[in-house]
Image 1 (cartoon, protein in one colour):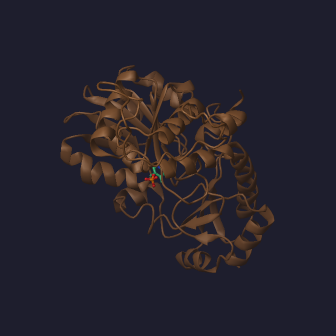
Image 2 (cartoon, rainbow, N blue to C red):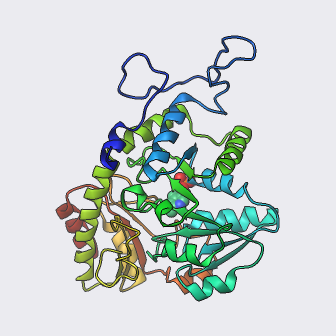
Image 3 (cartoon, rainbow, N blue to C red):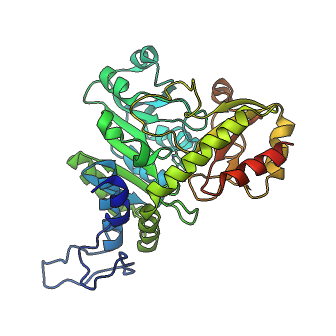
Length: 374
Ligand SMILES: *Cc1c(COP(=O)(O)O)cnc(C)c1O
């Protein structure tokens, strides 16, 4: 089946005898046993429930991985991944990461004795210089958030030892436009809250892996701490994924138009969108599309604040990847917990805005940006 058909038909409830097209919400905390020592495959819902199980198989198949796990949100998924490492292990990260990932690493995981370095993961010399015998993983976000820096996953694979896990946060492009396993990644992270869910109505997170041992350890973690996704949220994400390919195509088309509009605007000093000519790494074969996230810099902090207050259809809200176009102020919202020196070095300034382009009519998106900038 082709990818877009898989989005529509890929979620299967293997337990259902009714012919229901939708995977049912198995809202049960526990499952009765047929006999002593026997199980239907489900025991207690913290461990697994049939709705989550169907979603996990769907997301794994979309990424081309053997196992998927669904979590209560992207951060819970990343926290579970951290449970695969030991005190003393060293992880090299893209310097421009989702702010919540930086907060997790620096405020919580460091205390457990793990070490992190942040650098330009697309620079071979920076990466080679950071590798140590204790380096166990490279954590990549590509395109990065919010500066849209692209890391060549295959180039990283060539540099690092095969034993070093490459973990890719694939939230921005989704498997519609980027399949990290094809380029040497070992593990994929998603905030399913974003494009996979697609409707800004629930949170979810995913890990996909091809390593059975890692999958087993991750299952042990969710079973123990209870970070797995609920049946109702699993249902919503399955429903969202049915239109994933459709939404990504439309949002990308709108984003290209919005990026071109912004590029020509006198109050806009810089536009970062991988689909614009000359964007570094924008033509790499690892991505078959450019997504729908745009960051742009305006001429003054006052203009930035005015745009946030004047948008009408576009909503000033944190998050991304839904049908609604959202605008964010990374400095005060998503990246408030990133240390100031790193923020400044990256260019996350008072003049930087981030746009998650939705699936509305592109004329309305552009008209709204135009009146807000005026
Ligand atoms: C939102 C986001 C996360 C965190 O996911 P939640 O579902 O909000 O916990 C991680 N990475 C990226 C790139 C994100 O945009």
